[in-house]
Length: 371
Image (tube, rainbow, N blue to C red):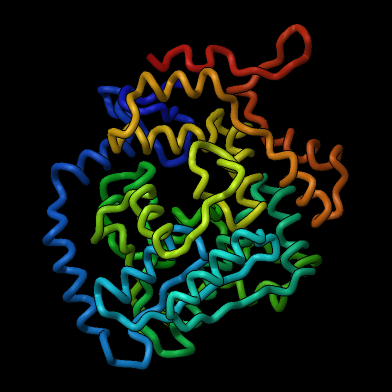
């Protein structure tokens, strides 16, 4: 593992690459945000786009919302900064937490119409179990639902503008062309939608039918073109910072976790789902990095933490083991703890992890090349 010279991301993180100076693509993208991107120009471009859709239908746009701090910020900004009439649209996963429900209710009470889809729990559980076993990722299903449902609603209700949040390729490290792409389309979803390059149809077999996964299927490109649906990243046009988004959302009633961070540094992130915690924890097995690396790197890039301070945290604070979330997942998917760990061990990366003489897993040279 080789670490970025500016933050604490290793080159094993998906989508990250280091340039010849040893700087990761996420840090390069952040430098572009600070010094190369004309944010006033981009904001004016956004205003021009929004004017094309404003007051054409009852709803001017769709904002996919989970109730998290980002979606609270997004929909509030659309209405109060840009004078839009947005419809909030939610794919409600069955592992939604109580604080996630509270924050989603708070978002609605800010004064928005809201449309929610709750999937068949039996189908969702079967689907989640399949993606966990085959790909080591229980969040593929929720990502499929969170992307597919708003797209379907845009077509069915004739609301041809969807406002998504950040462009992950700009915030977390992608190629230049992807960092500077304002549009979300099927090609982007297949490459960058946390779907391991698969669509819903790729999961169909004798146990999971086409009828059962219908809601998870993306509309075809021709359907989207015919309906003239445009999907854009708000984070392409407006500078994105999770801490700023939280500060704005907290003033609107958004609640952080009362017991501190569920993973990583932030007590205001990853609150609405239990499966997302397992998703992030499995990254440690696959890539030798965790939510701590993500959050610390964000803090370093935004000059709220030095790299030296970030390294000390990584070396002294191991990522929390998600005991409660593992128990919930095992219960939901009818797995014993032994079965669950047998599944996870299949995805432990042997190029990163080794066993010591006591049979304990460790990462040789962990952080050894970070400075």
